[in-house]
Length: 310
Image (spheres, rainbow, N blue to C red):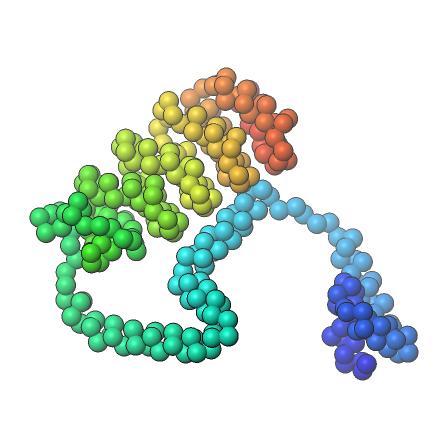
């Protein structure tokens, strides 16, 4: 072994990451080379100093945010076209190379065809629920997928782009029952978490409309933790009803994500401070403060009970 290799391998040696053969060669070189032996000792002292430094623990909210961001990224990767293409190629075994060439040819052909047809399709105007209700009836279209949900921040208008028998875009406001029907069904049933999250952002503009309120409550139990956390933020700013405390308490008790649960505890405390005490909620938080398996949840419940009793 040469001294140049020592510099590359010394961090791996320090963390016991070298293979047995590499470790033996490394130690033999260190035993024979005084300069490298001194360098290794200096590296050890540096790591001992680093280990002696205090290590601040990340907050539960930060950990929850990181976990949610990771799960969202994994959802997008699993649902995206790259995952579909990768799975198709990996299943090919020894035929992967010819199949990859065929896929590349098809992709290039598709882009070329799309570019050729682009002027013809671009000339077609979007279908709107308000202006062309007779031309577009949702009852007569089988919706296959939704590619975009967005709201104009100035006018409050809603634009939904979906694929039915052909791709259409419907426009209107949340006062339009057909727009609400699409959005509520999307919130409850659509399998793309990104679209559900965009839909939630639109629905929060009118949270007191009964069907929208029910959809927001349903989103508290969405399979995606990022959507659940956004739903909590929305429900927290809704006017309290008979269903609010019970829904938030259910999240505190049963949600699988500790970050979402602590956010629900904070939301409950805000409601109780504005509306007055709720003995059932206080008893439940007091019980969880001693019995919940998650330390962060126990601490947050204990703090919540103390704050509510002030």
